[in-house]
Image (cartoon, rainbow, N blue to C red):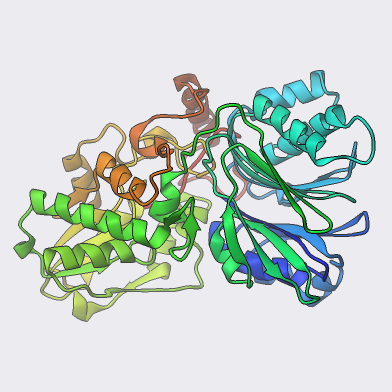
Length: 509
């Protein structure tokens, strides 16, 4: 899960891309990068760290040009701590191409072999993004009949890319001297949208980004989402060309975007993320009422930040007061970024602190967006008890996370998931709650899906075990588990651990 943005303008875009990346910072905190283009020359700066730390005044001055793209990285493939794998990536043949990518290629390993054995292209890192840019470059070379390169030839290349690669991908690429290309996988798993604005010089300006909040926060008006399998090409004059490049596209966005990843003020595939979370809170309330008497609850307390809308709606539905019981330290990164389990556990107390007056002598219902490993939930339940709570109940706005995710959310192998092969009672005992209530999978899909009837379904593999690309097998997960075992468990892993192209582990909760 990363945040990507691309801009075509008539005025310098370095500050505009920087501002957009700040608005997408929640999507990746490991590294950041920007590339701009002046004429046919590209200028790049990328490094590990947050946007505000990576780009200083001297770096911004070294990024001239009216076209560019950027990315904030949350690594799911390759080495999370290798600065060479920060994006954007660049290749110089057959055209100068710079590319940023959000997602995960599930067939990256076999593609790498094809690139070397057949396409005669060398891959220098473990990043699937380097594989993707080389596949695109090769297909552009095959599609280009004459110069200059035409939009139709570009779309032909994207069609060929769709046939070769598997998994999830939202891509923005800069083709030197031509313009900006954006495309999305045929299932629409990872989000991508575009908008327009009137530039400072009075000419139209086009921005492509992972979330609508990046458009709105920089003065652009959301036009629409990029459709599954669709490619859009914005030429240097700002004209948008679009074509469906996949044979059987189907809109199945990632459910975890609505549960946790996206900002609540974003609109994704016609669905308000905020409204989706409110709806999840309502169905969670119905689930709670059927599980335990609401009169046993004195107060409903969210675990910041993503769970707040669901917690508010649940509290209203059961007629109990909603209170803020935890103060979040905004200067500690999201816990799924933390490199080792020991660091994650330590970070919980640094990240959250309980307000004792809201807990003392009360039966509290804690509402979280999801429970993944269970280690953070266990710590938070204990914090509530330490603050004086008489009883601590836990509710998850998402269903049990029972399966790994391979589409760009860094979730652990199945044995690291608290809900895998455990009963509700075993999970409850592990986290130490007096009661545990989970969202229902079917209800969650129903209440989010009703917000846009054009949705064909959801990529919800971490909840239901259905991998919609059809190329993920049990053997893949066995290989992942074997490699992770050979590296040592999370408690022992430090900042140098490697990752597989087909691997994941999201929020520590």
